[in-house]
Image (cartoon, rainbow, N blue to C red; front, side, top):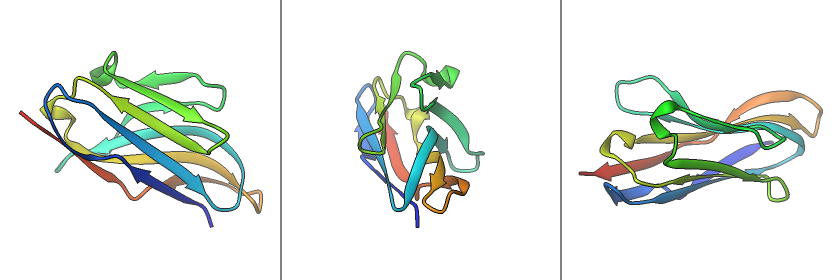
Length: 120
């Protein structure tokens, strides 16, 4: 069974930084794209940043220049470094990955979410 476990959320003042981590565990044959999404109360879940298996990245316009996504393929882990945080970054952040399981079936997997709250 494949699991994505996030960590690193919390409460921070505006202008501060947080680093989110998401570790993939279980029976895994390969991991393709990995990314972070966020969902604020009453809003839809939106892409924040994504990184391909080759290391190409893309970001939402609202976080460009402030957030950096990276991955450690040896650890099956994706990170999101968030700097110059703003109150509008407050949301539940979800890790996402496209994973080829040990039974050689591709699936789209989600973490349980981690709360990020930025106070003004």
